[in-house]
Amino acid sequence: MDSTGILFLTLLLLLSQSPASLSLTVSTSEAKMEVHENTDAVLSCQFKTEKETNPRIEWKKKGKDIHFVYFDGKFTGSFAGRAKIEGATVTLHAVTQKDSGLYRCEVSAPADHTNLGEVNVTLNVLVPPHTPFCEVPSSVLSGAGVELHCKDKLSVPPPTFLWYKDNKALSATHTPNIVYSMDTDTGTLKIKSVSKADSGQYRCEVSNRVGASKSSVAHHMKVIEYPLSMTTLIAGAVGLFLLILICCLDVCLPLTGLLQKGMCKDYLTKKESDGVLHQMTWHPQSPNLNPI
Image: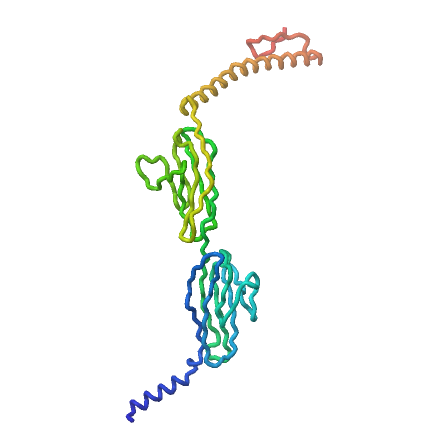
């Protein structure tokens, strides 16, 4: 055997005895998973050791804080009694939206050269639409702007909203003859200037890819029309204010003069009683007091 062959065999022998062959490996078959609400979620975690026969297994849920899911051979907190473990794979039963989050599987193998391994699994629990909550004003003045709101904060993924008037779907497409705007992501319906034709029964419907659509109850909105236009009403209000102001000035100014006269007479009476002034005359045309 030549020197090249001897060198190759030597390298293979060294690699076979390398501490790297004693390392711990941890993996998952599904790093990101989605399951429907109230079903089971299987959090996959597989490991392989070379020497360690009794590795330590822990599961944690990461968020603002880190919470133990499986620790010291048992499930903890809200996971106790509704989860099981096989090897290092955990199954959560009847999951809810609160179970969504990032989970970490940790395996410790003290006898191996690499004695700690971990893998992350992201769980997203899907929730079908819930009956939405709607805000529809019972009455609104003709010509005024109005907003109608529809909310569903529980559905995952977030739902799409659609508004109905008198059981007819309103178009979300903007065209020149449409006097309203509808945001299908937030559930807001805006009407810039309502008219009598906008009176009717309004309801909204929510839908996502998880379950059947849900609709709110219908709410009646009445548009009130006045015989006078809004401009006329504003002009009349301004005129009434000016009239009241003029009347106040006509009454208040003479009243101020009378009060001043009364104050002067009180002043003369007080001085005369004090013996300081025996007789004085007061001229309304002059603000001065002239002794006789």
